[in-house]
Length: 143
Image (cartoon, rainbow, N blue to C red; front, side):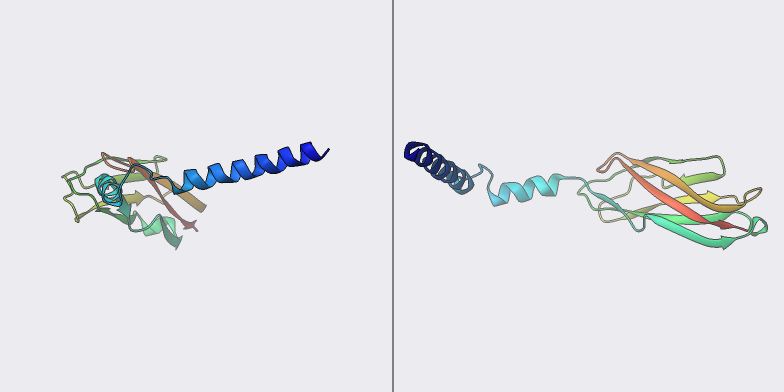
């Protein structure tokens, strides 16, 4: 009985020692190297994920929502496509390269004609960067 308790105690001590040694061991990547890896990551951001038109009517006509895309990378990026989820929404986007630190746009055009009630549509923005796709939403209520 005492041997089993001793074995359990010894096992716990050995396990904790191993964990402590692994945590203290160098990872093989210096802080400078990690910063370089992080700097090489491409990052594209969008100013908002949802545009709410609020309450609109069919007679209000075409409704436009613009999403601003920012290039936070060290090289030019492209918006390669902007695909709406349905036929009542069209999109247009910046077709030229977006330089580092600059912005481009994606515009979603919603047509409320022959629509009624609440709506929520998506536009998937495709880029040659990271992330390679971003999904934004437009929503509102047609009265």
